[in-house]
Length: 340
Length: 283
Image (cartoon, rainbow over all chains, first blue to last red; front, side, top):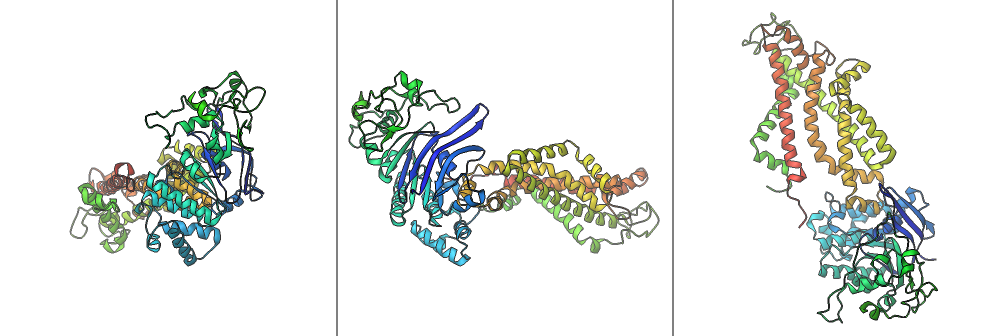
């Protein structure tokens, strides 16, 4: 049994204009020790999905199943979910500058989490907190425990958040854009830290990001999200070698590459993401897709095996599925299609 | 000045703050040390009524021959007691209700805040009068009445503060770490509301002093013969033409205290308002 099984997750907000479905029928699994990447642009539902798993979305309807270690988190009483949060599933957020309570000493914040979930006494918790700080690479841990968050740099604060997330040896860490607010050199350090921890502790990570570079370097499998839906799922190697969804092509083309001519312009994806209160009838990406045909605007494609790809490489796209209605890009190699 | 003590910086910076602080401290000392400071017993008739100021009676005697200065000093105790306890009632009641309303949202929020709106619809003194009509007159009931009157504004203020805090990352992060509702409130919400609540409390203190004076003036606050500034004005005004000191002295005492508290509140706001301070901790 997988560590985390998400099945048909739907998160709906009530707005003045109507129901906004931020997460639409998302299903995936995370195995123990695995690192799963979730990519997509802003507003694609990545963060809300993570918060839905933790049951931390205020005033939204969350449907579906979130089986974690055999129990459906969405059905558990609040008290039980709280015991899971921080101890079995931890979450690290995007902005390290504001994720720590500015008026509490860092040591206090760390030991509170440890004591909350383990019932350790103050001395044991302090020792553990110091150990965690050194694990994430903060020197003079014992002394720094007495410092306030503003006495740390952004990169250090994100390390502290990671330390806090790891405080109770969780089985799963949801990392929501954790390197977005850091500069490039610090980003590399934090990612190296995560890789080391994932390898040492067999912790499973869900890396939520819009940065394909992180996905390439960190993850085993990738889910590409668009407009609240999963649009492509593949092993990371397959996704980069043979992406099948035009949206993924767009994501890849908007990145600079080592092997491309430097004078070649980057290609942005034209247009804007869909309105999720009034989602389009067909494929949500059809409006922005250069390869869209009539069927794309009329019927929403199912998430199924992509033509000409490894088994388990799923795609929600008429053009690259081998179906009677579509499949017109089924055998176009990605590079050729993108340059066409 | 370090950024750690914006209050000290404000005191150092502004003469008005210094004056307000000095005046408030003076009133506090008088209120605290009243029984030892007052030259005479405030409730004994010691001389002929309405004597002019003399060496024995610095401000003269009142309409039945009690020492006016001693009564003023003892009136300060009443004013402070009522002001502090009434403000505390309003602060605690309002903060708790506002916190619950904002945190639990939905129907709880609507129920609490609509009740507060109803209370707010009454002018402060009228509400206090209505509550006293139910509870009966007296010092304790006056305090309760003024305190309840302060609850709605505190609740609204607290609710607004907490709503804005709930969107902050560290609150979400704390919940993601498994913190309970009570812990989130106590550790991650309440400490951040202290400056605002403190600033509002200074003006609330001033308002409580005024309302107590108003109630005592109407004979619904402190019961005679205990001295209270409002009551002294009420009895003194009958002799306004012959012995104006009887009404003017307690009037000035009220004015001075309210002025000092309001000025202090303004200074505190200047010192603690995050919008008027450079943000610390962000590059």
